[in-house]
Image (cartoon, rainbow, N blue to C red):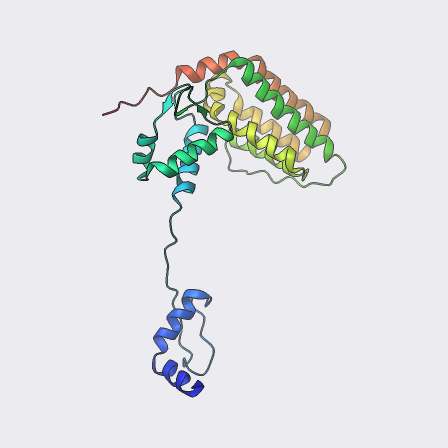
Length: 252
């Protein structure tokens, strides 16, 4: 029986090659063994199945964080499903998940809404992020951490990357989860901050410079100033977001 199997594989080297390539054979490497003649195997690309829920979750989350939805406006499940070419089920599941993340809200009766902006709540969120980052600096004061700033990031992304690095360095999962939740809720303010504060790029460069070459105390003071400035301007930021909010989509 074993001899018959070997003879069969020797008679059909292409089938053997394709199967091995599709599993573990690296592209361009020669197949080993007595039956292949040292031939080179080409990888077969097998398309991965699309995950509708993951697609809906990541797309709608990105839109919410970019401020693509009008604050307090309804998010229509059928429209989102059409936009993504999905059924309504994964979209509904994704919207429910994002409510749990605090990026969306449930409507009083049914459905989902983009989050309403409130100056007092906004100040509280800035305060929570501030305390998360300051606590991270304190927890890692005795660690020798080499900063790895992204030199190609713009001001907003550079600062968020800095905060993320500081919090992750603690290894404290609860702190990381708290930070990520509130930071995601504040991300939609990026464009509004750039319009309200004319020096956001210079502000970001100063923070990155302090991370790389400054003292922990100076960095902590700068981060405090960064957040207090936004807390004091929370009402102006809310007005700026609402003024530039996208108009409700026209339904056919």
